[in-house]
View 1 (cartoon, helix red, strand yellow):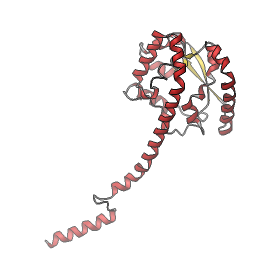
View 2: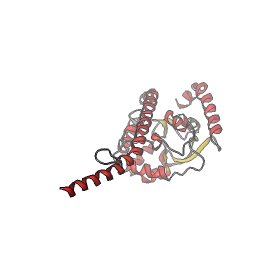
View 3: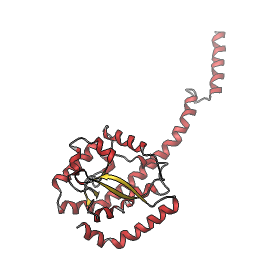
View 4: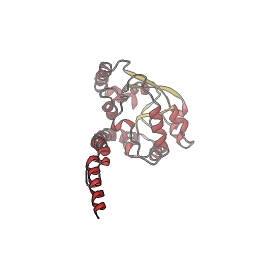
Length: 242
């Protein structure tokens, strides 16, 4: 099924992939493709391919800290770049939001390292933090899309993501794969709206945060520091008279 669908959809994904590769090279110096070692079937390692959406040699420490925080909290799995990330190249956020940065992983599928449907391949440092229960998600091939992606994705917690991945491992079937593939496009559209909402909220919050120091410096009547001093002086003179 994987190979048949890739062949049938080649007239769509091939030109889109070429355009993305051209865009990445146009807006950022460096290779169009990004290669990262990931954990695959039964813990095997392979080089996962993606279109590069970040500047060359970007620091990954901040992503590790963000991931560690999500794994140890009960918060939704929102991406670090949802509200902006200076490491991204121009247009990188939308390439990631639409999921088209992962088109090169079709090569991983053809190599037999991945499937169209399955849990997302974990990074090595992510896998090292997994509990034994979590590692059971590697009992099947990792995929481009999966049960987690079509059931909330960034709105779910880490534990909920793991539950969905393990549910897929235990119940996977041709029919389930077909449902997941059909549900992927609506899930991507929902993710676009989520990212737009996050960016709007961040844009509204920024002016408020910039205004906060000035507001804090004013008195209870909205006075400036100089006005407050004058008011205090007048109050002191009135008290002396009394």
